[in-house]
Image: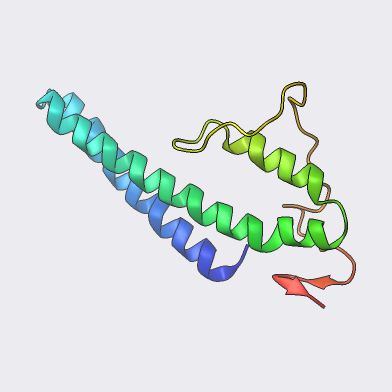
Length: 121
C-alpha cells in the first residue's frame, strides 16, 4: 500500500472506531434516537472515506500494474463487483458476469514484471 494512503486509511479507521464507540455508549445510555442516528452518519462517512482511500490506492497500484501487464479486464470486473454495494455507485456489472476471479498479484506483495511499486520500471 502506498504509505500516505495507508496513513490516511488508518487515521480514518481510528476516527470511525471512535464514533462507533460513542454510538454504542449512546445506545447503552438510551440517548435520543436522532442524536444516535447523527453519530451513525459520522461513522458511515468515515468508512466511506476509508473506502475512497483504498480505491485510490488500488487504482494507483494493482489496477495500473494489471493494465500494463495486459490483464486489466479481470481486475476491473473484480473492482466493479466489490463496489456494487457502495453507496452512490451504480451497478456497472453486465448480466451473466457475476462472480470474480481474484487477480494473482494484487494484495500479495508481488509486482508485475517490468513494474515497480506505484508505477512502471
